[in-house]
Image 1: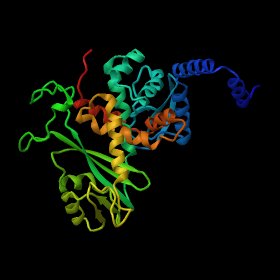
Image 2: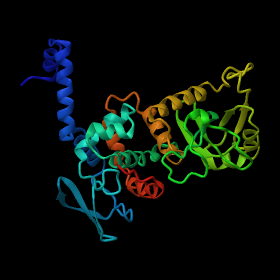
Image 3: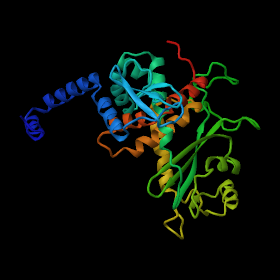
Image 4: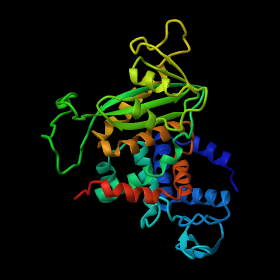
Length: 342
């Protein structure tokens, strides 16, 4: 029997064109068989011998066979049946074998309509799959930030993309955007970006004309550990927020300086770089509706977290299979989502 090293050596003797063709064929075959999803499912099953009840969180459950290869359970406390995928984005999906290819397309930053055409699915299905997947990523937002934390806000134009009832004339181009359109009229979204020195990112979209102390209190509620050093620009709202939170330290500098002239460790370079990355990340989608923006921010942060992994698709599947509330989050999201008619 040939070893993996034997196969690699044989593969390296082939012409580059043949290598690429073979890799493409193997990838397609793997996607059609859903091999990565199957592998991720086995990893999750090994991590936990029994899945707790997603309805009542009880651990008094027992296995009751399989349906279409999916493990079934019954809860002794609430007497409800459920499966290994109940509550996850993969719940009630009829064509799971296309999800690996779908995630490959997402990793390439392809828009919803282009993925639908690529995989021969409807645009509505492509939209639903994306947001089912993204609904599972809120679990990866940091519970607490500590040490030195850079913070600044990225201002984006408020987008009502897909809305059927606008209270203003539709914008034909991005350049039609006007920041100030009268007192009380909000036309912007502020993406509050906080970055720990180890690279941990916390992103929160706030629909407001100008960031206030109250907005910051909501964004950072329970997020900043005691003795955290918050580094910001001279925005007065940050100063007021820090004054009301004496357990944290506050250092500020002029936004145009980027680095404090007296202390080079006090800077906003990481957060400024992240803002550039976020803009590049959002650009291929030709505008993201502001009501969906938080999902896309979670997506960016998760991709950044696993960027050094060689098995990113498997990581996505494991993340989805370990969260039991993603389907409920998607159902809540869908109440405000736009129905796409094709």
